Amino acid sequence: MIEAERTQSPYIKGLACSAVAFALAVGALFLGYTLPSLKTGAEAISQLLALVLVPGLIVGLLAKKSTRSWPLWLMICAFIVILIVVTLAHEFTAPMRS
Image (cartoon, rainbow, N blue to C red; front, top):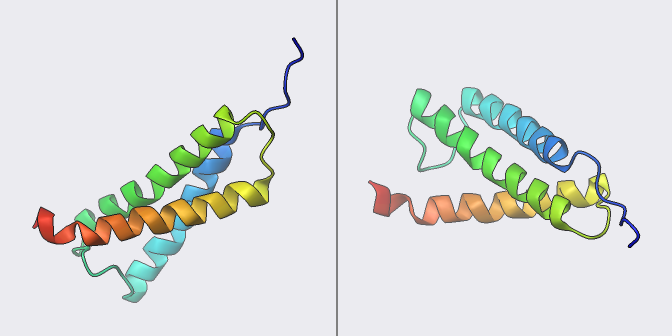
C-alpha cells in the first residue's frame, strides 16, 4: 500500500496558531479589550489560554487524521473558525457557570 502524504508537524502548527492568538489576546487584555465573561487577573489569563489551546489541538488532530496534506493557510483558516465557535460557546455558557 502506498503511504499517503501527510501534513508535517500538524500539532506544532496548530499550537503555533494558538501561541499567536494567545499573544494577541493578552495584549488586548492589557489594553482593556476583553470578553464580557472574563474576570480580571490570573483567572482571565488561564481562561484565555484554554480558549486558544483547544482550537489549536483540534486543528492539529484534524490535520493529522486527514488523508491529504493540509497547507498552512488551511490550518490557519480552520483555527480561526474553530476559535470563533469555541469563543461563542464559552460566552453563551458563561451565565450557567456563574
